[in-house]
Image 1 (cartoon, rainbow, N blue to C red):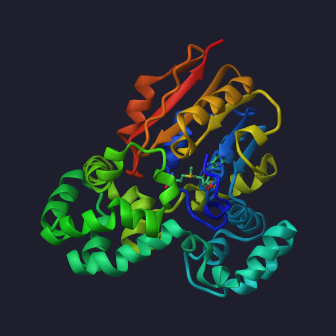
Image 2 (image 1 turned 90 degrees about the vertical axis):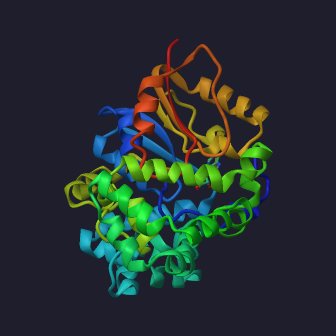
Length: 359
Ligand SMILES: C[S@@+](CC[C@H](N)C(=O)[O-])C[C@H]1O[C@@H](n2cnc3c(N)ncnc32)[C@H](O)[C@@H]1O
């Protein structure tokens, strides 16, 4: 496991870069269930509240991710959807005033954090993660030199797979794009500006070397198989904001239901072993196994085994790494994992694993 506290003391993801539709369809949460979900920027755990669970524990080793989520929770609990969009940075407006309206609803630690980082509030929290900053650099430096901001904006709104492919080939995948993609999404730049060197520690050296090559293939597969117009991740990358495709927790049809279920959400600072000692119906584990050794992966699975029951679902992603549970109790649903993976709108991953516990 990554030991360096410095790696986990800044907001890395102020949005969640894992497809929410897949999180929901992969686990198919039932009313009254109990789950544990890696928090990150909070988007997916907020979305899961539309399924009216009994309780979801959103856990993260990085406290600032929890603060970020606390701000989203306080906004949803107290503000209209339009005000929440403004406070979080999706639309323009008087953010400080809105922050003052909601900050008393956050923990003292979260309040202190944002009081000390008031520029995050001024900028809008959805733009403050290190990963989001990486895409801000992409829009500022790579898009204009390889195509144009207008082209990307037009591309991000397309809803026809054939047109998307043609447009990509003609106007996005230029010679310069291919060269700069390799540099910008190569291991070195990604480790420095987007993720962290430590996140590659347990990844095979060949995979590290091929980072940009693998990623380009994944991106192209995604662009040719999913509608751009419905893709909030592409919207953010192309326009550096959510302009037409919004994360589920910011969609009008779900907003009030999420607010009604906010009391079902509890934030936990820590890892799998720090969760309350319960039997859980589901675990949504992001790609946390990416960052640990094989041995630690095995230890985590042992912890997981103690907290599941017959029928529990476990969903996680592999990004660069290859972590597969080899254990008779955890049965991989290959069809569902593959079917959903092919619909993935956040294209960065190697594969999706959905297991069901059979005891
Ligand atoms: C695993 S990261 C992945 C985010 C995104 N998929 C990516 O890699 O670009 C998501 C969140 O998991 C948290 N995290 C990492 N390892 C963890 C662990 N063992 N237990 C709990 N949270 C963890 C990180 O702090 C981060 O906020």
